[in-house]
Length: 376
Image (cartoon, rainbow, N blue to C red; front, side):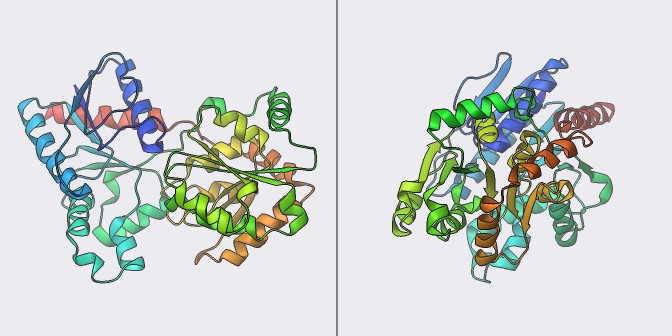
């Protein structure tokens, strides 16, 4: 049996989708799957053994501590072949590194008082349990940027770090019918030929920099803003950003779509993706835009931003982030009559790179660790 551990599962989270894909691939190879979590939204796949514990507590870190104590008891009573974690915590055999280095962010962006708070102390201790040099946890790493930070702050040895390629779903790839899908989608929205459809895709609006995006839209020249439609796709509290769009005078230009199942159609129908994240371990949507032929603008903190740069399929905002630079890039891109050519470069680049092999690589590492444990 393989134990998959994560704090919370919901269908539209990037980490959660990756967990599900890896677990399903392990099940397909004949492994029994047990999931340990505090909440599960949506259908439970056939054959999954689901264990849900809803810990009491006034704070997230307090509930996480109680969840981990419960998890430890459960795994002691029924030891699995391998413990695979998707949140940082002690006792993992394999950790899927979807989150960035907390200690690095705290030292670079926060004051000393923040580092004394119980929340930080607990989560940093959990992070150390995974990445410290004396730990035995094998790490499925997604970002070269984050790898360097973990090695710097914890001395994580190279032999425990296993890099994974991206995991772009095949339905994101632009096929022969992409022009037809694009035309039909834009017709549904009532867009004219000279209208621009700007999109941002991702849950967690604060981390993804949605406020930066709204300010960029507000900064557009009047004639360009009048024919630009900004659609926001993702699952989060939209109220602060609805208020911000009203204060900026662009409420009529912004549409909050919520979580959507038709993201491939949206990527094909849009003119430009923007992703000015404050912190982003990977940014899978950047690679999804690449294979869909959609130009993108992203902040340099995104782990997958280098793919956009290498493909010359968009623009990267350097760190430290400058809102004026971002505004200018968005304006220039929307005014560029050759914008679709950037998208074509992305499609050509994607045909030469492995952008789909994450799940298989992760499963192979998990099976190797499980076999080693069985041998011991």
